[in-house]
Length: 134
Image (tube, rainbow, N blue to C red; front, side):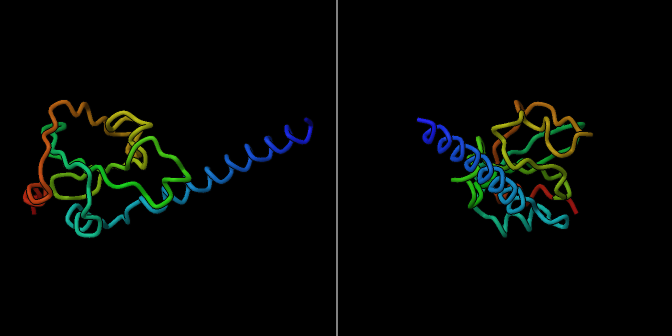
């Protein structure tokens, strides 16, 4: 019995260690380079789940829900990654796991409360490209 408890303890600690490592690798894979803009993102990762347009503080933003990373089977995210781009196409915020956070809350950009996506409108990838202002 003692050996089973020890074995289960080792397996549990190992699972959490591997899961933690996988999550770090997942974040590394999903984080976009600082010079990434909406057009570049859509070219490099064309299989977005959802593309939404919403307005916050009188400005247009594009919210893109991306695909899971290759680490998803180990890191077990509760939701896909999502990215917010401004009207010039610049990446302004993102989260690696939308299942753990509310829309725009507790994301990387803590200085901007994105508000509610209630009035967000689903758009196509082509419509998102056309929204970008030079």
